[in-house]
Image (cartoon, rainbow, N blue to C red; front, side):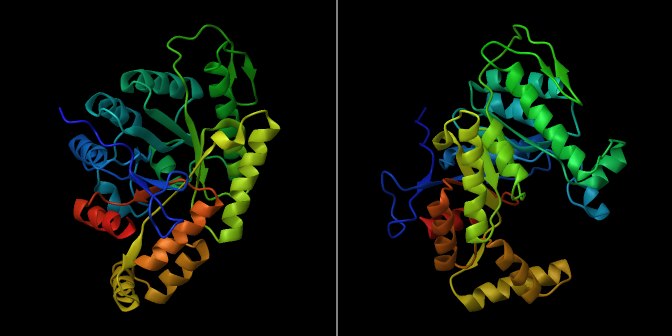
Length: 327
């Protein structure tokens, strides 16, 4: 068997040429209409040298009822399968809503998949946001404040459960009596979202990775600094916190071609190209000409981001194009 490629690293600071101390790695986050489709895209990403393969954890895909005919699979079950059918790529749930499962169930799932994957699994925990799926499945959907409180308690619970010597944990929502829990492999956590304060603080305090969506340059840098400050405040090494981002890249060779792409997308979504561009500009989403996209990503990298997850449907030709244009 030929050796698998090392993680794909794209240098962006020095005229977009890779160099030893300045690079950004790419990862892939996508959906599948069947387990076989998840497996196909994960193996493709591994063969291309992507650093990680991620899937979201949803019981419904899309907020529009017309989209709910698409099959939605349990993310932990999918990851367990991929753990045995891939060899090198990191596997990430990005992210699992705390509203779906008790932390003990999350802990057992995570420990099992981590063992099955040989240590390649990373677990994302979040507050959840899609009220429709909670309503349809009869799952309680507390207000935002309570969901953040539940998320922080779950993160603390998981760290207590996976500590070298598991410790007791007692909170308002969850409790754990520390004992020699088995199996207990290394736990790798991601905290991600659009939040400007709570999300970075939780990531720095508990996680190995902050997944911060694109934002204006000063706001993006502020999130990263807040996460690192939180890590330092609890005795963790801020330099070990991986900073990542996610998004769909809409780009073309010329501004005219980019505008045509926006018009087509706007027509499908029932809006205008101007409105899409306005919203994308607010978020500083990677978009425009390929040169503009490289500039945006380089700015995010300058702030500290070293991993970017391509989000969207698995379309190999489109992903090959993006890689060639950003290399």
